[in-house]
Image 1: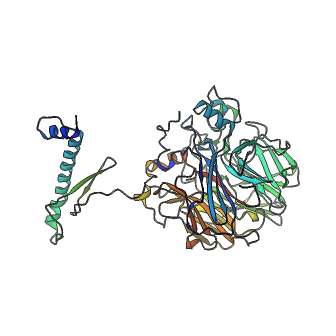
Image 2 (image 1 turned 180 degrees about the vertical axis):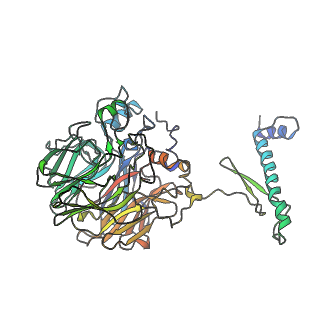
Image 3 (image 1 turned 180 degrees about the horizontal axis):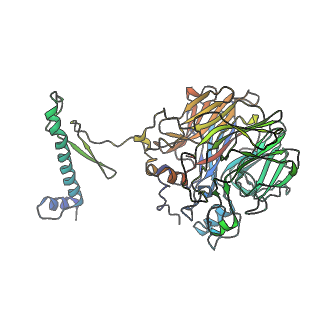
Length: 106
Length: 487
């Protein structure tokens, strides 16, 4: 079945829900919830709300390496992954002992 | 088949590289000093196959030798496995046949009874030959033109120890090499054989003696009159090996000694001073001052290596697994066998400290080593969070004034062992360059940094860019153009 057909089915209530559609819906829901949490109190508290902020654009959710990034700055910017390879990241959560058991001289 | 998918510590920058390389006319930022010709030879390791046991020591990694060849301002790079009998046996079997560090009882039943060394610790250029050294076997001779492995070398049959240190010392005055083997007559023997080898590669002197107990004797220091032999903390036994444990365990109650051996003396002349309970894995230098013998070394407060666990089950303490530059004074006229200890710098450093090798055994002023400068930034967003574990700087430690100058490699970098290269053969101490390989975690590549040793704060003179990760190094040595028959 083509992706297009999947999308059509997914868009029809009661029909097959594709992974893509599920993620899109989840992201939208998360984004709206997150934006509401930030927007509502901020709107009440901040008298000088940034003039440049376009309320119609709302918040933006981005996925990077299976993690959700939610832009709540009001600038509606997508998350941009860092320019570096982050090649130390796979070992950064190891304890000092676990790390030095395998890597003595880094 | 090589499968590293279950090795959680071998990911990202720390994944094995597993290839041999030639790079001609490397990319350079800056200008290579035209006056230094020769090669920066590095020895370290890369896993051909994953370790057979998850709790094995990283010191079991297969040896890999590499070389940055400097010639008239141009640098070529070459890297090759050290093709030991063990390497060849694993490759033929398509798997890791050999078990834990220096424990043949843990080998696969199908493992052949060959030399178990992986030859992965220190390169040595001596008597016109290039060697790959590891302290559990004889030196492996390497062809300096191709870096291909020739085979073990026993100095024309006169070197009788079964093992050879990774840290022989070359006397800059006589050109002799002072070297030794411990566990010299086999596993779990406390025999130490100490040798003098002349500059043509012939053994001129052998001294056999017993260590106070069987322990790691990784490095020594020499003066014109003495050889200093640290023994500390690590213990082993045949029972331990038969129980399937890694070769060394840490015994915090074991006394630390420094043996002072007259270079022209006999075994009965050795005096074992009891030093403070530190771990002296590497030394900087030593000298004679009247009746005193002085040793300087970056010593650890306690066990530096968690993969050699405490024999009484005490958890490894990372706070005490740090090294500080210290001075030890042994008074040959004293009636007791104690030693005076001074901590020369309050900051902890990499214990891979170096000096200007032309001053080995002689009065000297500067020590060099890496350290973590926490006042410098580390870009976690580009490199990953390794900020507290990297050596982002090299320091020049002035032992006369206590002053330290520093070189910073970059905010996504960690530096491997430093090496001092004299500007000219007759240049004064400290007049030259610091070189070393930096891991760039943001660009996933290695870079050879070259800095003026007298102007470290100014940064690089030049930086050689490799388009890949060079195999991790333990030790590196600068070899002058006239020391080896390079291509």
